[in-house]
Length: 336
Picture (cartoon, rainbow, N blue to C red):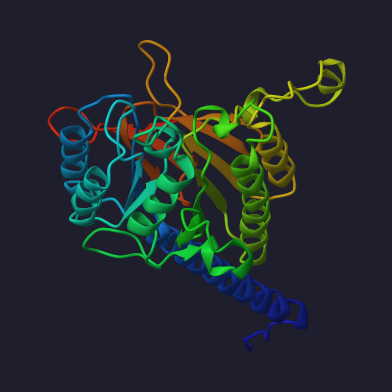
């Protein structure tokens, strides 16, 4: 019998089937490449909390040594000294050398105890002079401290804000990291009349800085912004909607109020995650953990030294782990 030729419909069916198989293969390849790309962007960072201890150097050295044993892309140190320690140039220089010897790229976030309570020999406040000295020692270079370097963009590169070198940003993968000078003692808000110029000037600088950071993240289509500061903005406790209207006005002496409102407003317009990391004290027995409200997350580390895993391919973009006494990393716990 003569062989039957396939009909036009049959030929079309074969072509469609082949096309579907080809599309499926390309889709699988694209998915695999996308996952591999995200895997390459996964990284970790370490945060060394801050406490009021007066033996700051041994603790800081131990924490830096522990961090060097881990696979962290960078280390953030909150504060260089305790409340009872000297504000002398000698101590500042010693801490600068200690942090400068760290093997990992290291960023210092200024703490209130580093400058706000410092006084001269006459007993008068010399907070601004000490802050300027910290800027000279710890924030003069366009990169991180430590043996390995990461390039930084400092706010002081803007002619209008040349003094604010402690505010810096850098990127790892698809995450923008940044520091913000927000000291824990109510943002160094002073109640005495006519003595709030430092606070007011820094408020303007921080407002500009935050708007700049979110503009960069939107422009570069980044997945997240992480902000490091000593003070807790209490952003997740800020009421919204009807509860905000019913609640009494924020006290006039709340030094974080304006910055908190700005962060909330910017976060609402940002499509990615926003994580606030600070050194606020933890409740007794509590461990550092991320709390989320929408896309805004908050992590207080207290005096703890922790690692945070960042994995765009995982369900939880940020996962918190903690170093134990032996220096080993505990398995990261998924928070969200």
